[in-house]
Image (cartoon, rainbow, N blue to C red; front, top):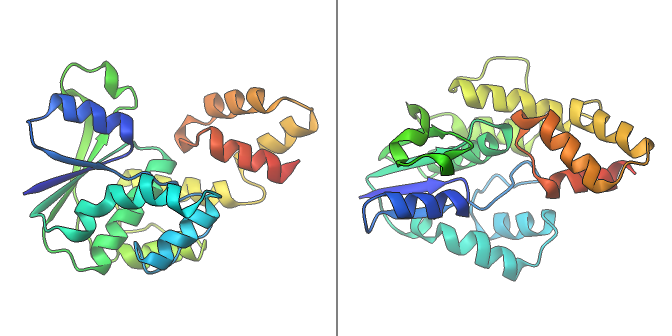
Length: 224
């Protein structure tokens, strides 16, 4: 049995239409770059902290995120295939999923497919995969603890695939008070630019971060 975990509802819908009938596909509807996260991944306390940090009611978070993870948390699969973009936002979500599988000592096969951001333009699902990696899970939970829980990114090469290595470097820049995005937003706020202008500008100038409207608006409020 194979479980597909994808980067959001749009890709889930795309794959459901393109793949074999009955293929189990779930979306990881999270933003792990936003706020704090606990070490006991996907525990009740983890989920409640995440809802609080995302500033949404737990009932809404439960319906959108927790319920979607039911297949991962409560059923056994021989193989898990992750389908995610190469940008920082997606890679921090990939780190979280791999850290969870490491922590629970998952013994099945794990494969990561790096997908095109414009995947919906492709006729077949095979065409959306840019790169594919088998993942050895050992050590991912320790990296997660250091990077996402401790927010202490070390000046070293982590033993991970290239896209996650880059994602970790970008995340360190993203959370830095003097990071590229914070500096750019602070400048635009000082210029009295509208939030919509700032969102468009940041999205276009920093696509490698993969951050959406919600996170840009949070930074705008923080830096006003």
